[in-house]
Image (cartoon, rainbow, N blue to C red; front, side, top):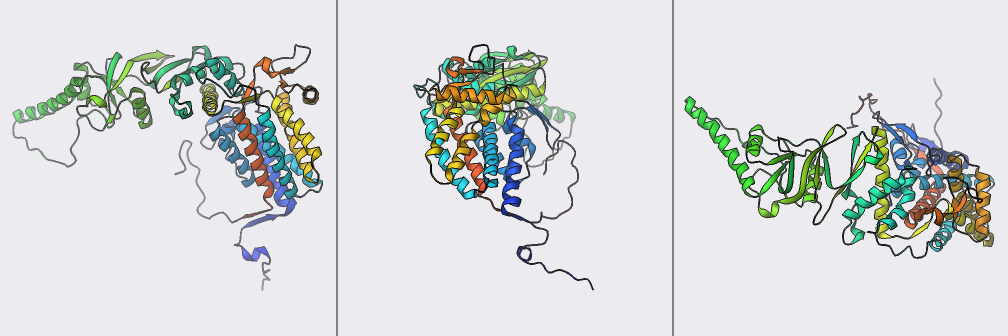
Length: 550
């Protein structure tokens, strides 16, 4: 008779096959370790000299990027504690659109320092209490570092926009930020509504066309649709537009019917009536004053024939989202079926023309006058992955514009803010009594991660630079940061950021630090991990690439 051991303790309470980790070594330190691994991945991509990562996701799609939000999105992180950091990065990306890397890397650094404190004997609760005090104080100091006069900003002044946007774009595309910022600022200012707080990111579109180079990029007031016009008319100026969502074709009846035809004459008449009906519909559209028909579905042969006869230009937009944007650009109301449109339903465009860009035919819809609601940045580049990366840089720039429409205050960039925060928080920790002071000092030390990483990524000596920065800041020059461009002056690589014109938005820093501290404290609060047995079921077969999970 086999002797079976009866489960005891927590095993007897939970189902067979569960995992249970508790205590400092098993739960807390393992969680910290997983978060450290994640922040090590993103950290080397921080700043303008950040390295690129090559990520291949579960659908065999290749990403070559240094955008932390894209990297962690495609990694499919499994560890529950590291997922908390991923969520913090996503929250930052959705809130501001830039600074996800700072959030994840800074949270990882906070946890690494917390691990050292735990090993020296501090309890996680004391560390959390110290970190909480430090972040409140840190945000107060951040308010003091805001550049005077930066809260008043004209969001339609291109120079002011580029100043605030430059750092965000340079961190993705170093060396090309001047060209890109100029394009992004033009596009954003064109579509900025009367009340800038209502700026919608979706109104700046990006169209990627392989070929050419960055100097061929342009901004189009209106939309750029991939694909040719249907039919032979390829150009229209100052014309009214009618949009039909379900396609331009003879409509079939709902019910099935049988037609009995006795003679050839009846057959001819039957065909003629269909023709007459289609002509009547197309003529009605032409009589309403519309010169361009946009179809959301198929365009029938016969309908196209009559469109040509009445000199109507026909476009086909199969994506319903694109169709909605088209309606927004031209101010058209989409009609469900082919019928005579009312005057209110018609939109207006300045010009629609089919152009060939780099061997690819595109339809350019321009609406320069009146309420210009959509602008498109036409991107050119040699490969798809370069274009994808440029698109991410533009997304960051547009999101930064949205953030500055809400709050335009700015703080010194190039790690000047971080060193000042580290210095001031260290002083604050000396005034604290109790064990919190160690946690606050470590929190302050964590800020050194930014200048250290920027220097390491640029191949400079980090210790040397950090000590120089501290020295300059201690003597009262709070705007000294790292100049990664070169160190030809007597100051070496440490320069005043106001001369280099590198500024970060206050909101970006504010949310990045807040989310990072919250994520770090959440991970530290965990002392037990209890995982149920994964739900059973047949093993998933390997799906062919490109298939969805459904």
